[in-house]
Amino acid sequence: MYSDIITEQKKKYGKKLAILGHHYQSDEIIRHTDLKGDSLELARQIEKLEAQYIVFCGVHFMAESAAIVRRDDQKVYIPDASAGCVMANMAPAWLVDNVLTRILEETGRKIIPLAYVNTPAAVKTVCGKHGGSVCTSANAEKMLSWALEQGDAVLFLPDRNLALNTADKLGIPAEKRMILDIRGKGLQFDVQATKDKQLLIWPGLCAIHQRFKLAQIEQFRADYPGCRIVVHPECPPELVRAADGSGSTSYLIKYVDEAPAGTTIVIGTETNLVNRLKNIYPAKNIIPLGISVCSNMAKITEENLANLLVNLEATPYEDVSDAIRKPAKIALERMLEVCS
Ligand code: 13P
Ligand code: SF4
Image (tube, rainbow, N blue to C red; front, side, top):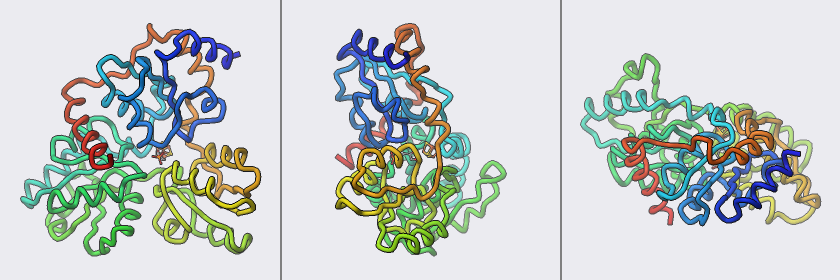
């Protein structure tokens, strides 16, 4: 029933409407999308879309990023604005500002903030104002290399695992990294200890990926000799090191697509995506490393998508004030430029 309503509304709006979906959305939603992708691919497409009405099926920071880079004639909507990201909530802008200001003022070093796209708009604003930028899991290596060239050190936030995994790939030695203790409103950690560091790391995490354990990888290696194991870089570093590959959701899809028929592939990421790959590639043996559902992604349902489409013009769209939007857009555009 909701599915019929969505189909009807899509017909009514035609090319004026585009429904975008992140890979962690359920099949029920994905089947209605005009475009699906990882965070980077979706962010890149917004401005190029012919559509004026963009409905973003994903979590809130994704819709908000779309609202930052949109054209003036476009409006961005999300079917349930309460679909947050637990990791994004771990780096509120006031705290990022406190920490960055302390380090800048007390060390006099040029610190470049680099925010994972999984952050609120106001954090991207801080990055834009301080010569920093944004990255996604698909371009973290490139963006961290870029950021290191812009100053004396980089403040990477909020994902500790992505920071450590990217630092491993770039060969940044352990003694040049420091995980910040942000307790006490960010006023507690030893600022002088940051002075000889290249990479200052916010201690945020994604609970969905943190749940996977090294013992699970070891068990699959024992049970399925010769299996391939790939994980998302939000997983802890010991898992990434033990896996055969790691990358964004699109990387994981490509890995499965390119593997020969008959390969057993164990995947460490959100369950909706792993189940979809299992259905799309029946000739390959796709196994989840463990079951781990993002409950926020799951807040987008056919019911709230149908309701939004029926009431589209009467629904408030994602709006970001100019004071937040302009510097945040600079930060996002730097990323799109560096990675063009
Ligand atoms: P991707 O950018 O790899 O799609 O990941 C976004 C995300 O939130 C993963 O948890
Ligand atoms: Fe956020 Fe983790 Fe969900 Fe991705 S999987 S949206 S990082 S909570």
